[in-house]
Length: 87
Image 1: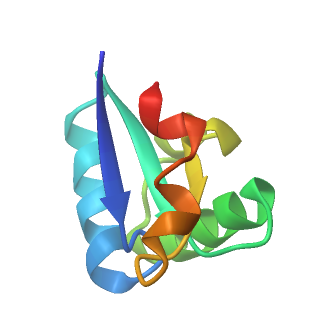
Image 2: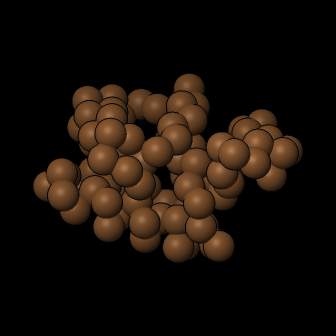
C-alpha cells in the first residue's frame, strides 16, 4: 500500500484535498503532518477541520492517531527523523 504525506490538512485547502482523497481513494495510507502536542490533539484538529466538508463519518473514522505525524514545516529536523516516515 502506498503512503501519502499531506501537509496543511488542518487548513481550508489541505482539508479540501484530504476530503477529496478520502472519498475517492481508499487504498492509500495517509500520513498527515500536524502541529500539535500529541497525536490525539492532532487528530482532533483534523476532525474539527473536516466538519466543514460534511465528509461521511464512516470514511473519516478510518483516520487514527497512526495517521498523524507531529511536526512543523518550518522545523523539518523535528519530524524528518520520525519513524513514521519509514513505514
